[in-house]
Amino acid sequence: MTLSSVKPLDPKEFDERKAQHLLQRAGFGGTTKQAVALSKLGLEKAVEYIVEYNNITDPEPVLLDAYDKDIIRPLTAAERKVALKARQDKDEDTVDKLRKERQRRQREDRKQISEMELWWLQRMVSTPRPLEEKLTLFWHGHFATGYRTIEDSYQMYLQNNFFRKNAMGNFKEDLVRGIIHDPAMIKYLNNHQNRKQAPNENLARELMELFTLGEGEGYDEDDIKEGARCLTGYTVEDHDFTFNSRNHDTGQKRIFGRSGYYDGDDFVDLIFTRPNVAKFIVNKLYRYFVNDLPHGKTADSKKFTISISNLLKRKNWELKPILKTIFLSEHFYDDSNMQAIIKSPVQLIVQATRSLNPPQRRKMVQTLAVSADLMGQRLFAPPSVKGWDGGRMWINTSTMFMRQNTLLYLLTGQRPGSASWEADNNQFNGMALVEGNTRDPKDAITFLLTALLNQDKHDRDRVASLENYMKTQNNTINNETVTGLLTLITAMPEYQLC
Image (cartoon, rainbow, N blue to C red; front, side):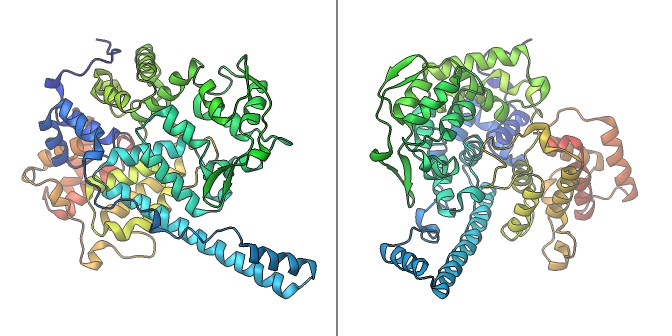
């Protein structure tokens, strides 16, 4: 039967496998026990629990004063006066002193963004509200900005919290309207240089091309030029948005065939009159949460995304009912959409850490952040304003090698030049994963394959290879052999999917 409708899955079909599927897609996976507990809640209550994450207490709430906001700060009037006088007087000693102070601040800021990277990765690993962080990561890739261009860690932190606060809010009013007032985005796309005398088109172009409509969908170059005029004067003062009326073009603009004395907020309203907005963002959400493989582009998926797009417009751009509908739907749980997304490096690392529960999780986070970077996904550093391409672009011979080594590190603590967990008397507890399924090697193999790959049927060759391994271990179930099984399973191509 073709499952193109958005009608809910039959609650009787919501089993442990589908609960794990929900945990993986609406977050970063979980243990078998967590999947069992979620399945016992039933479909509606499980989705409610995941989506209504604000009902869950955050044990480590995000604090705006957790980081230093003044490392990269504007010069005071007195400091500007000193710098100007030194240049005028050709006072090389003072100029050099000021340069060294600026370089010191830049080093401190680079250190702080690295600390933020570790903080966010650790937050994903430990949060009881995984959908909140999964969505924050989605918006970070959608409205992509990078630290190397902005060079102000606190502005990246503010933007990260903006995404988190509005992760499941209103796409138009909270996210899109908010992003044109976001200091990090304004600096990243040079809108602080957008003045009526010399309009800068970057933000206007990406607002339509990458954030709301899609490349070439429903706009032309004249719309970009006029949109840039709307955004003149939208700038930044320290860490705050400010509107500089002197630099704003107050003249009449013509956008999408309509004329008026528009500003940036009017420009957003005009964009949301275009028919492609809902389709564009729903397609991105679909690839992120439902299916990003080539076989996912079917007539069935198109019908589903059209239905969701229409729902988004009816709900006036509210995202929560959209996500609830997706996570409840038959289509979401269809076999063709399970194990149909290639794990991003962050998904791979966080999901493995949450489900395998290796020792010293907090001590490992720096190594895991480096691993994510080597696999192509560094937090706060998307490769461009397009974000990460994702999908099959995550996988090549180099990244596969790194992926397998990262999983080996999680299970054994082994990396070049370091000892394993055993040397630290803090061994990985593989037996905790198979408790109650530990007596028969074949049962243990089936259990681990099901738990790690979330499949109801297992490839015979995969099973045979694991059985052969157990024969070399005299079919003994202990921590060493279970860790060996986990090492083999996490090296399988299927483990790269969720």
